[in-house]
Length: 308
Image (cartoon, rainbow, N blue to C red; front, side, top):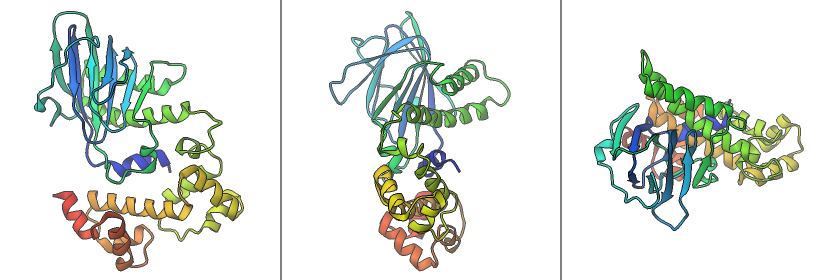
């Protein structure tokens, strides 16, 4: 099982929202803080991006560039940093699956972007999200990111020339785009890096241990059985896992079990005792106690609030 895909899926709380933005110079768009992660793909033309909450320098973007914002923090997209930004209407960025549209500016040079937001649970995010930089810029570079470049090409074609099935295709491509962005970021990290999730997902011992915990969270894993699975001694495995992931193996396992349980509660109607068994708890009572300790609510109440 793909640990990266599962980690992202566990945090999803809704479908991604996206807007096709076409600006003609002069134009500038001020985007407020959002919920979840944001992204921008430059489909055509050139522009600039800069944050609104600090004094970071504007970053130039060109066709094929991808921007990922871990926290959807407030920022401005503009044809030039000197252009005065406008704030979009609320309805331009709500209830627009899979792709809405926004036109702004004058009659000058055109820039087209796909701007979007992934609804993620930032209250208890997976640690892989916390380790991401707030701002990731992936330049258009087919030699380094061929899959990401191909996905952008497919997305551009569907947005500009919709046909039969485009609604589902575009939605799926937007979903895939997040994983391609994160994969590209992981692969760009130095191989010499000894700690962090980018290293853990590529490590020949830690990665298989993470995968087996994700594949079968209900199993009665121990540090010894996980170490045996990856061919290390108990002490060496525990030390390596804790150093890379940032917490001991069984602490991560408990976190993953409860994260998985929360996803089941949000998205399914399975009985709570069934969810307890699926996530490695011997009784509904033990599950409820662990869940409340982590989420501050008993499972039933969490479910009712999540679907309200």
